[in-house]
Amino acid sequence: MAHFISTCPSCRHTLEVTELECPHCHVQIRGHFQGQPTVGLTDDQREFLRVFVLSRGNLREIERILGISYPTVRSKLDDLVDAFQGGESPAMPSNRRRILEDVADGRLDVKEALARLSEQRKGDPDDAHRD
Image 1: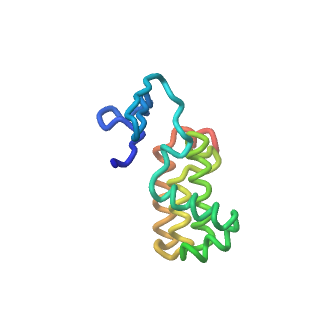
Image 2: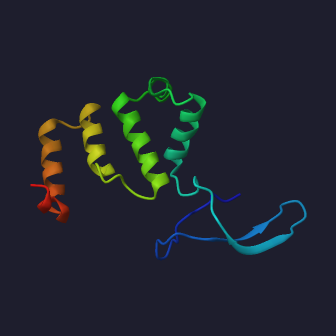
């Protein structure tokens, strides 16, 4: 069975489910069906959600199971919340969070992180209103 896709490979807009079929008797039902909230999640987000549920939301347990740092667990949880809300949190976009996560995990030094964050601010029109 093919892996479900949620965005159009041509124009990148969200796909809509319009047909369902019974694998046993092959009855087909056509219409406009509301998708499941997990359809648009990445494989990584689905795995994190699975571990989150199995660990009953215990972030320290998730940290242990996945072998990642607590800030990484928090970042992944924030990304999952953003995905369910249909976009990024206005408080801190996920790309900025990932830079901070990379610093916390030792994959990036502070000087390089500051340079990347500064570069992102230059391209952010909302930053003109923050100063």
